[in-house]
Image 1: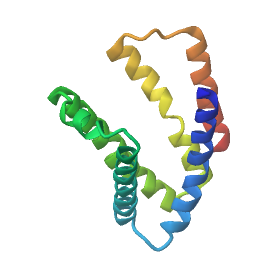
Image 2 (image 1 turned 180 degrees about the horizontal axis):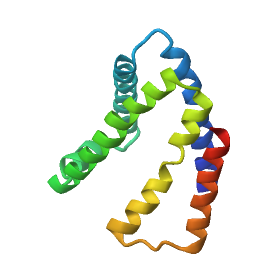
Image 3 (image 1 turned 120 degrees about the horizontal axis):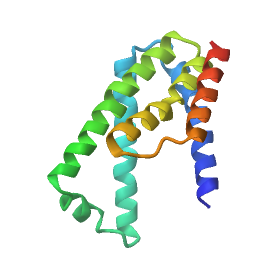
Length: 143
């Protein structure tokens, strides 16, 4: 089941940049990001409301009970990924070839692998290193 959910996410993330590129044709990246974030927030709030109607009304209680440290860590993630990262992504999509930009953006797990090794002590194996080298080689081929 997880495999198919991941495949679905991959397809969504693969199609979405095409709409972003077309949508940003006559729009600067920042207003585009604001519109996208507003729509996403509206949809998430609607989803919370829908789940509340079908018996999952504890979501807001769970959010209120989240510790400050967790709020802080998620805020940093939001700043890096949703604000700064997405704004850079939109600027790159607007100015560059969407097929090149998305491959480079999709290489973010390389950064995650290195940072998780340094800060979380995760194991860096030969297979991970070889996989990273293949990803880097793939990026070089499309450039």
